[in-house]
Image (cartoon, rainbow, N blue to C red; front, side, top):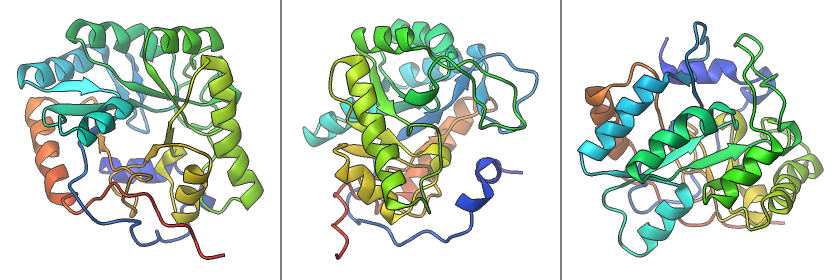
Length: 270
């Protein structure tokens, strides 16, 4: 089974029923953004979401060795707007696992990299109960998120409670986007401008809700079917990905996303 299929199976059944809407924008090549979840040593990894600390260190060493620098998505988009993003790679960590602080941050510090951690404000300090078949993983606590933000790490929203957004009623969709942003801004004491769709599940209504909630951008996954500033595609990274596989994924990203734009989605007709 390939990685995209594994990600798809992780989705709740109700979020898999509809076909994606047409892309929200066409334009320049999308920036290269890598999608991580957990960095830990695990014997079981049914959803292929975990990268071992040693493999993660090797992947960051490869970026450094090839004269690339890992950055948060916010930094990447700002550099792109200024024409300075040629050797930058976005680094994202979904779900807000506590092992981000324990295993990823020290390696990123070593190379002067930054990254974005997308957290679930209603579940901070608990576990990944949404992964039915996977091992229990501790999530970042309120204090850890506060400390990370104070240290300069970008904190983004992953929804209030890790619910897939497509198909939700408008009021619930607004809560998942607006209220998660409000809660995190109160927690970190500053703006929260990035959103990441739980399970990578996105449709046009979700992108519009994220935009209307005041975010500057949102991350999806490579096969989401939508593109644009509020559905930025990302390349999955797993524990099997060494140098040659990362190089191949970079090439595939460039071929697949040459028409991806960064325009904001238009407001839906009322």
